[in-house]
Every structure is written in C-alpha cells, then in structure tokens.
Length: 267
Image 1: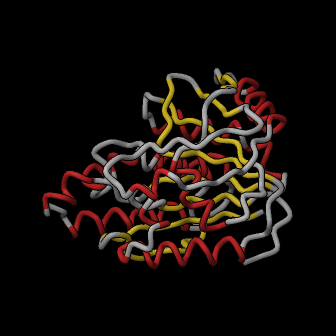
Image 2: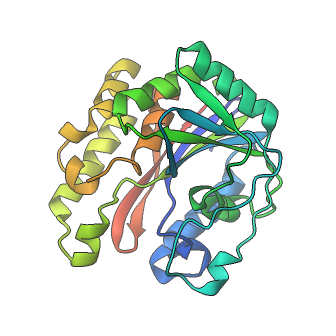
C-alpha cells in the first residue's frame, strides 16, 4: 500500500461481537487480514472511528482523555468481558471533529463520559495491539438516513489532509435473522456486494455520483436483504462522504461463512 501523507479512510467488517479476538474459526481470515493491515497502513497520528454500535439523535464525539471500554455484547465466554485496550482519547481531535461538523451546519456534541464500544476495540486490538494510538469515536445518527451520513463525511473532508486513520467499523452484510434461521439469499447477497464494489471502486463515477448512489443504498439489488436495518452499513457512507475518488476493495472473503468487503481510500 502507498506511503500516504494524508488520511487513510477505511471501511471494514468487524465481525461478530468479540469472536475475532477469541480464535473463532469463522473469523480466522478476517482476524489475519486486520493483523496484517495494521502493519501495512501508514502509521496514523490518531484514529477517528465510526462504529455501527453508537447511535444518537445528533452527532456525538468521545471527548474524554481515557475512555473506558463498553462490553456491548452478551452470551459470550467470560474472558470476552475482561478484554483490555487502553488506547487514549484525543480531546483536541474531538474538538476539531465537532468544529468541522458544526461549521457545516450539523449539530455535534462532545461526550466526555462515553467509552469505546466493541466496534472500536475488537478491530483495533488486532490492528494496533499496543493500544498506543489515540482514538476518537464518532456516533451514527439514529435517523439512519444515508444522505445525512454522506453529509457528515463531507463535513469532515477538511481533516483528510491530516495523518489520520478514519475507520468505519461495520459490515457489508448484517442480516442476523436470516443468518441464524438459515434463510440467507445468497444471490441477493452477492448482488449487493457487487453493487457496493462497483459504486465504491469505479473510477468512471464522479464523487457526487458515488455518494448519491451510496446514500440511496436501499434501492440497490439485495440491499434490504443484506441490511434490514442500516446501522452496520452507514459507517461506509461517512467514509465515502469524506473521500474523493474511487476506493480499492482490499478484503472480500468469508466472515462466519458469509462474504464481506473492506474498502480503502488513501491520500
């Protein structure tokens, strides 16, 4: 991967709860991908992370210097509730994120009490196990509106010149009811993965065309099958709104037996 001088903007699947950290066979390929990726990307000065597991009516940003971990899952082995990842926050970056959003007319609030959820600490513990890179987490909007999340990304575009990792943590497939009942529609799933790849990576699309298509993802073939609820896809919209030009799909493999993709923009 290139030695970027600006931001790396990345969307990844973060897997099922803490399973990528528990040597789960269904996550072996994803876990190895994330370990390798942390070594391949230019080392960032800080990480801005958008997780599928934090929603608020207006944008909220972790502002604390030492956020605690939130074990926001249940039914897993006892060891998964003792995972540690003592990455520091970065209040100055949090303020800059707030300023960028408010400057674009989007309400945004610092949250000095909120901790880091598993959409943060599971992938980052694999990518950067030393936990020595400051992290700021940005919420989704509880409206779950695609256009609003594209607009959030656009508002953050001035941060693209910094040596940041902007990390959207979610999944390109998240239909747990279909998965656990055995009613997955493989054709619909593959159609949606192909659609995402084409919209994110086609260098024939303008930024506006790419972002408009991703904002209207429910119209895509297989979109609503893969995402009955949008929260695991919307971190991608924030990333795409912040980015310019096409992405590169850097992961397309099985996670718990279902395909998922990761996309990267570098500057």
